[in-house]
Image (tube, rainbow, N blue to C red):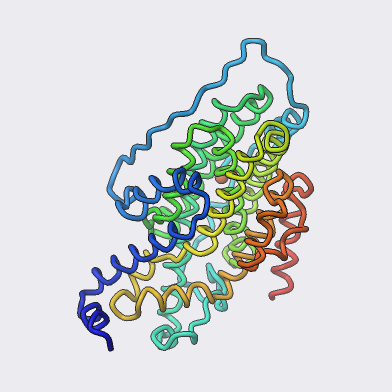
Length: 398
Ligand SMILES: [Fe+2]
Ligand SMILES: [Fe+2]
């Protein structure tokens, strides 16, 4: 063993974890090729990954700098957005109408929140030694962690939707945006209620999620907000919600997610519609390239960095290394499903808005995402179709 390794080995687990976290930060930022992307993501990376700004109590302030776009002539300027607005008005639902009376026991083996196969417990000795009861408790932690991140993401979506409503240049887009603000408020409401009344557990915001939210809240360019929230974070959300919807046995959670997925499908559709013409007609090639690179880096962040370290700290810190934990999470069959649901939605949307040119495709192929190039984009698939695909996946897995 090298001297440095011997020194490292003697450090307390907390310090070792912190060192590993810093190494990860260097890793994330050192391979970003476009300096403009580094400039856009860097400050949020420092705030989220090094300073842990999302975990330092209430409130967290983020300085916003976008321009509010007024139009005193109230034009009917975008029929596709108008149609989405009509659909959104008709699709409103009341969180109170969900079957809250259902008794949820997060560690009931008959009604598991996550399926037994979600993690491969035999992959590492320390997990294989967990008793059946401990495995259920661990799954409870993991499910609560996922739902907590859903909730924090929804808070980001609520404020981003409000910003986007101010900043967007289409008047029909502003009407539509107002319905999304309401949708996101309802999502915050139902996830918070579920966590508080059924899970009795709430985790802090994940640092990587914080980085993405912070970056798009602070960016003054309206199309970057759209890209960040409507395409990337909503894509992430659809992947995560879809995975949980198609695997959980808990009926209240399924009902809740079913409604939320319908809303989110509309939100991504709006993002695609708003960005499609803008990227193709209004951006210079250099601006387009910057956005293309930005999306790729954020996609990598979403693929590689949601490692649930908060669950690791609770269960395994000091017992296994963060590297072993990363492997365990990365290889988990449930996480594999999550990545595939997420990218099968996200990558075709990038293609549709013009951010998947021949220049960037090899980079996606290199990280194994090439198989999603030809899928259906959000304007080609409805929320109902998404739900029936997920139901079919569920039936096939059963
Ligand atoms: Fe939402
Ligand atoms: Fe949304």
